[in-house]
Image (tube, rainbow, N blue to C red; front, side):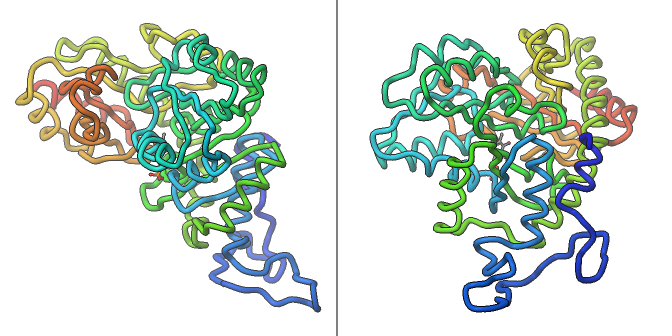
Length: 380
Ligand SMILES: *Cc1c(COP(=O)(O)O)cnc(C)c1O
């Protein structure tokens, strides 16, 4: 089966009891045993639930993974992977990663004795320079938020393998439709399924995918022990979203390409960043390791605070909100939203200014999006 067929069929055989073509919401905590020591496959829903299993199997197939574990949020999935670490371990991470992930590294795992080194993710050599004998994990996110830097996945996978470290990739921005890191040498993928996987801004969730049985068992053991499981309704919504991932991603990317090209010609916009533009510093790498370029576009608005506020307030179709990956287009101001936790100096080092605007381009009609941007740029 190919991608779209797998999204619609894997893990989703018609229900054995009723023939329902849709996997039911198994709103159940416990399951009868057939005999002493003989459960039918499910025992207690913290450990496993049939609706969750369907979602896990489907997403694992799309990432070409042998094993999938769904979590109650993207951060719980990240924490599930970090549970592999022990005091004294070391992690090399790309500098540009999701803010919640760095917070978990620094505010939770560092005080517990895990050390982290951050490197420029665009330079594969930087990862090997930072390795230590106790480096257990290398952490990457590509494309990264909000400036769309890419990591050369194959090159970093080679470095990790040679050192005996495990490579973890946060594949939230690309989704498996545009990038399948396990096929490029990554050991573990994490997702915030809140974003493109679910795709409709109505459910928080996460997932870990891997083909390494021992890593899978350790992460699964931790999840069952600590309990950050998603409920059956959330899994059902995520599975419903996943069925249309391919068509959504095609429209997301077509709209994002149109928006990026439109902004490129506009006198009030500068430094337009989208991996699908030939002007993106890593466009060639994007073409090599991705099948499409995603739907996040960043740029700098010319002017000051007044112009930024006028631009955002004039937009009607782009909603002014956090997050990304839903069918509706969003505009975000990273300096006061996603990256407000950084100091001004840290933001400057990360390349985020008060004029940086991030668009999460949805799947509305392209012309409506361009007209909306045009009106807002004229107003400022
Ligand atoms: C949103 C996000 C997360 C965190 O996921 P939640 O579902 O919000 O917990 C992690 N990584 C990336 C890249 C994200 O965009």
